[in-house]
Every structure is written in C-alpha cells, then in structure tokens.
Image 1 (tube, helix red, strand yellow):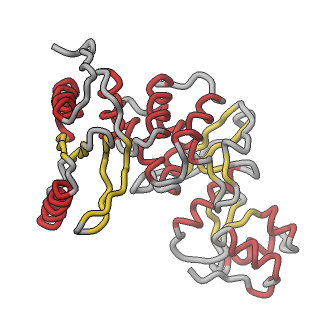
Image 2: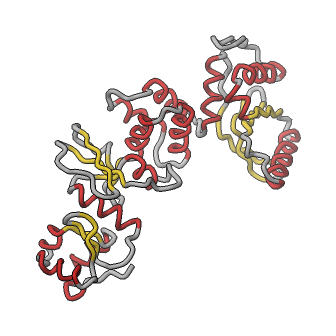
Image 3: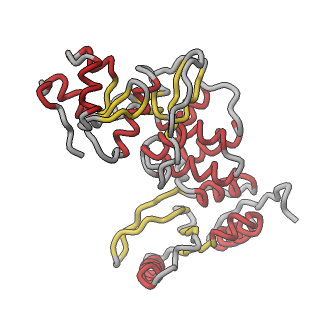
Length: 320
C-alpha cells in the first residue's frame, strides 16, 4: 500500500491518514483544507479511490483489511464501532474474519448497510464497559463481544468454549465477564453464561475444565486447584487439576493430546516425575467428561477414596 498524499502532506493530515490505515471521510478532508473537488480530482487521476459513500482511501489498488475496517467504521459515523464476529476476530476469538464487516451504531436506524458492511443498531447508549476506543479501529470491548456472540449461539458447548477461550487468551477475566452480564438485561442463555463466567473466574480455562468443574459440583466432589505448576526432574509441568491433601493429579486428556510422539513422550516423562514425587495421577479422557460425566465422576470418586478422601459421591439427576 503506497499512500498518496501529494502536496497536502502536513503533520495533522498525515497523522490522521496513517492512524486510519489511509481511510478518510470527505468531512475529515475538509477540516484539513482539502475540498470535495480536490478529493474527486485525486480519484479521477486514479491516485485515491472511493470505498463507500463519502469515504475514500488515499491510495489506489487492492484495499488492505485494515483499510476496509476503518472505512466501514467511518461510513457508519463518529460513534460507530466494530462489533460481533468482526470484533471477535480482532480480539483473537475467531481464526478467520467474517465475510462482512459488522458495525454497531446507536440511535435511530437512518443508515443502510453498504457493500460488505452490516450495520447493527442498539437503542441503549454505549458505555466505557461496552467499547474500546484505544485500539484502532474502535470496537466493542472483549466482554460485550463475548456476550454478543453468545446470544447468537445455539450450541451450548460452543458457548462454554467461547467464554473459556476469552479468559484463556487473557483479553478478559471471568469476573469482568460476569460484571458485564450483570449490567445487561434480556440475555439469552443467561444462567449458563453466569455459570461459565463463575467457573472461569475460579480457574477453568477450557471447555473440558468447565465441564469437569460442573460434574464435581453436581456429584458432591471437591474441586481441585486448577492450572497448578509443578517442577519435576524433566522440567516444569502444569496440571489441569490437583488435590493437595490427597496428593492426586487430575489430567483431562483431549483427543489431540497424544496426537504425536513428542506429546506422548512429554506425557510419559511427566507421569514418571509425578510417581517419583509420590503423587498419583488420574487421566480422565475428554470424551468421557463430555459424553458421560457421571461415569467420570464415579472414577474420580474412586481415585479420591483410594487417596484418603472420606466424602461421598452424590448421584445427580442423570445418574443411572
């Protein structure tokens, strides 16, 4: 991308263009001494290009992703922010950008969606909890982005994984998500979201860990400390769960865990170090935790009893 500023290069104009990935509005150009007809002349000379009505890019050629994002926000107005899947991609919650750019505006719907841009409206004023303007382009906050996406999901496990991924990536915390949820009315899946936020705040940073925490609570099992660091002869390891009193390690093995030799070898060395340190390890397959949590709970209760736990397994409504 070669930005073409020509003889209008000055500190303020140049800073604006670079800050907005070369996208600008005709109103911004006027405020910097560039009238409409001179913008049109640059377009006619194929130095600049029109992106949306009254929104231009100060270069010719294929538009970059950043220019498209800025152009969409500028088209929607000064208070507009990226939202939904677009904001989620910018926060790292989605691997691929959505096919259209989602933009959120407030107030009456006077603006129609432009090519490649989907406009969303909210009647409620956006607060500092809802938006993040320090990042460019402005977007909904991680907390609002998660809640916006969660309302669109029918797959409840995908909802849990969304919350877990947001916390795991450290763009937010379970506590902040729960606070945002408390300030929002009429939220779909509210009860499950509240539970996921509380589990994330307690250290569950994956779908498996959340489902494991739920099976512990529903079957009267004590919950282990999570993401515990342990130094063995082979180096540092992180346990999914650890019962310090019973000296029991709980590992939730996803289907990808032993997918290659290095992972298998690392697991074997870790298990050896655990034995040397007089710990016991319980491997719970992720498929068992997700598909048959009652059986996983029974196996965990047995392991705890063998290590001195004196509590009782409490059957849940799903137990046979």
